[in-house]
Image (cartoon, rainbow, N blue to C red; front, side, top):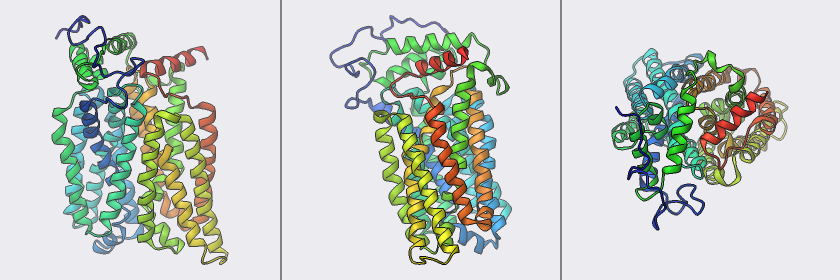
Length: 478
């Protein structure tokens, strides 16, 4: 295949026409002229995010029914809830390599095969170990998706839309989780697992009709296909010459370096990128999110509040707040949203902890359940506006193309490892001390504020190549 690109090709117009889909500064599509192909391609990608959310949300509304039908104890159900993250760690280990060697679309399709098999195993489970196998397979699938979806969306969108479009990943996770909560309140757990197959099939059947990432195609040496994909994504009248040239030059510069293994990432030039990427994932998970969303029903029961009303309240808060985060992503920037989000999660956990303290002291018995609800809702709302989406957005932005696969695998693996620790330990922590559990989460969220203020760069309005060059420059001067 010819790896050389003729930049005088008709695919790459060298001047702007009157109908070109670019903004007034030539920075890419304006919000009023976003190409239809870009919107459809992003929607196909984030169907994977919906699958991710439905898998996470499944264990909360089904807990009592599964435990009753299959005669499981708390420890056995904790294995079922947390084995999802074991599978996700397996998926995370191979996610970067599959996405780098086979392409982003193939990786998404591969993940959905795992998810479909997993949901089928859960649907027809008669004994606990079939449940575990099914949950493990779904975990493998979403481990792949959690890396490849935000990376793919970040690579196909122009810089002025990248934050909002990448944050749709988290919005669809939220929708998947919330709708699974709601549907799970009315249908049998086997039917709920069957319903989980539908979005998997939608993405799997749609993938052949969307373009692959122009940046991945350039990295693979398929430069003409890269230019063609970029033209499709920007609109047929858009001038993509400058962006295509920047992608080509940046890719060629980094391909002169050896593609780093995970061990090779621990070099000075990648130090800040790695610290920011890994640090945000650790703090995101140790702030308690998966313990809270996996076992939301049991939290409300422990606090003396109605589990059904609490679940509906979470949905009512989570979707609007996630939507606000998406809308603000490219306006306010990543850092301000992260800071507000981290402060809010700290306050939310503190209020929940305080409610359990009052419950233990047998004081304000009518107030403590309401305080627990308020604390959980403040936490979920605050998390949704920033801490949910932005670590994945930043992960997809900060690593150069020659290490993106290895770095993405490492960051995603760390995220799922921390998620497994929290999801497995949460029920035992609550048995130890409900108040102590939430005070611990509150302290970690407070530390997150300091971490963001000191280390996390602002990436709004900059191309991926500009972000990566500035971080490498920073590291090389250290």
